[in-house]
Image 1: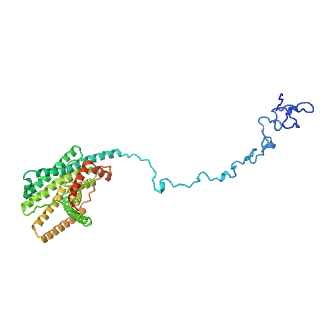
Image 2 (image 1 turned 45 degrees about the horizontal axis):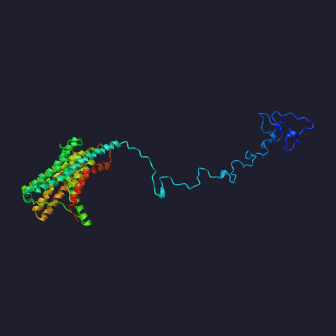
Image 3 (image 1 turned 60 degrees about the vertical axis):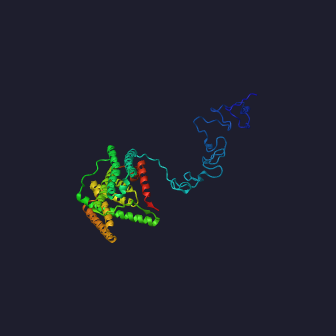
Length: 446
């Protein structure tokens, strides 16, 4: 069957819905003229011309396809709910804003970490601009420590080896124990050998590596200041011996541990023996030990600060004594002697303090060997009182007359703990300290 449907033909007003409008013939048998732009098949009216309003004015606000009228442009002809409303009954504008999350806010990172433990916010580590210079300085400090450790260890091993060999020489032990003059003369030579030789070799090595300069063996900057410091230093050394005695008594009373030291059986009952004893126990140790400690050790460390050099040289000086009776005293004395050497600019100030301290010790031993106990106690009291009184007067005069000499900071960029670890942490220094600690333990009684 041929389909004659033409949407541009004019429909009859009585044409039933669903029928072809061309099947209805007007009464006059004529088909009305076509509309210029055709007819709307749903309304039966001509389509508007291009450019004119698509919806006639009378239909403004209504759906052109016969739907429900638009209401405030928020409801269309398909029955949708107004824009901005939830089709399930809750308007969207009643939701909490996105800036307020529906969960409970957590504390910021770094205040309370997992399980309530405090944590710090992670920060990206920044490179240390001085890292290369610090590594180089650590390397130099360690190289100095290696030389010092070998010197101390060499002193300990050399003393052990020489003693072992000499005892095996026929007749040597009998002469050493039976002849006081021989034993004291040998002790002077022995200390000169076992201390001076290894530290002199160490000094040459440090000079070759340019780690140390000339030793300050000239006259002091100010002779009067140096004289005052000698008596101040002597009083400080005597005070250190009392501190050492009090420390030993406290340890014994609290823990039942007794500190001892090598026994000296020499009896100073004549002047020649006394003079020989002064030579071997006061003069030679003052020269040799000051060369080793305030010379080789302290002078090579001064470039990293005077305080660091004084402290480390005093520590090495204390450990070399090898017993807890003398170690606290030697450390205090080492601090004072090191200070005096630096502020006077001469090692002879340290030699004078060291000699006077040892001489007082020898003099007290001579008094003990030749006088009654009551006289001994009286003379000891007078000697100690005079030493302290003179030391106090000299200290007052010194600090009122002379300005306080500041300790040089040196050229170090390492802090104190970094320098201490670099100096003590080398293998030779650790071995030397361990050996001296073991030796010291031999003079501890439980």
